[in-house]
Image (cartoon, rainbow, N blue to C red; front, side, top):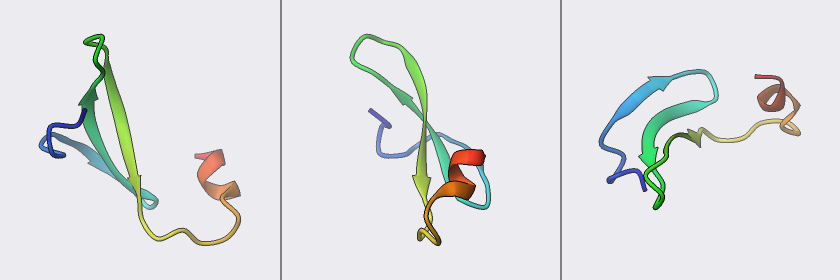
Length: 46
């Protein structure tokens, strides 16, 4: 899906975003989260 996380789209306070491609050829952004802190409310607001 992410081709071994080859294409990095960006990085923020909560993690890194990579380009991915689904089996139906649709492109997606996949965020890999850093260590989680709190209850996740801050991430949901992002």
